[in-house]
Amino acid sequence: MESNQKAILKQAPLFFKINAIQQQIIFVALLLFCSTSVVSPPIALLLGLIVANLSGHPFLHLNHKATNILLQVSVVGLGFGMNVNNALSAGKEGFIFTIGSIFSTLIFGTFLGKWLKIEKKTSHLISCGTAICGGSAIAAIAPVIKSDEKQTSIALGVIFILNSVALFLFPAVGHWLDLSQKEFGLWCAIAIHDTSSVVGAASKFGPEALQIATTIKLARALWIIPVALLMAFIFKNKSSRIKIPYFIGLFILAMAMNTYVSQTAIVAPYLVSIAKIGLTLTLFLIGAGLNRNILKSVGVKPLFQGLLLWIFIAIGTLLTIMYFN
Image (cartoon, one colour):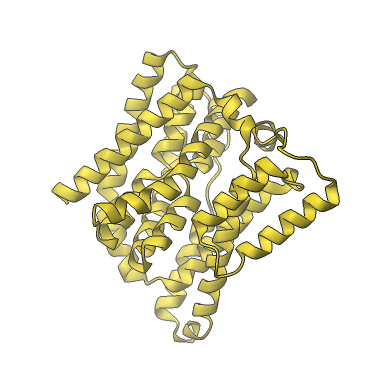
């Protein structure tokens, strides 16, 4: 998986050339700036995109691992600001949406892949990334279906591009349609690809939206396991191990401590504040890993499939929430 990430995130030609020390100073300065309260998650992502394409990422080889670890720690930290009872209520409501959206997206993605004549494994990876939880789903499914580096890289590129757009687009649409925090939290948990952008968009919308979105998205991520088993059956691969997102258990433990252990209230606000800073830094790193090489590697047809799938799940979920929920 790391080799796939290195291939797609390979440093693109920069707009201006500077030496390595200057590059590191600029990068670290922006990283520290993103740890302040002045910078929101979407702005952090934008700053990452700018630095990736203007001066470059001096630590690109560490970016994937750092992003994963920071995101997982941040999500666990957010659990200290949530209540188990409220999470269970949100989880029950999102369960039907989750099942319906996952399998309808996978089915529609299969038809789109055949219609657009996209290579089968690439099409399945894009569908799984859209249906479940973006890059994490692709990372789990890729070894199961034995996709090669190019297939995995294309799928990751599609998800990275659309996921970045979602962080800016969804809050704007949510305010425009005057969605409640409950409606927005449910919508972005289902329709935005990666957990990082789900949490970033929801935190910008409000605290209730954040709790609902985080809970539903993490419950949705567990569907990696049955979907991976299904893909192993379809692609006749019984030997691959499935990557399980164990950090979700720590998130549940954090929520339980916040709900049932009264002493947790002393440190919980500080842990949540640190987690939100961690999330902002995560989005900066995600942006810093995106450059022009991604657009070049993706191609028109896979990006078109990802876009149509995203429109399908976003509009379908939104209409259901607004008129039938």
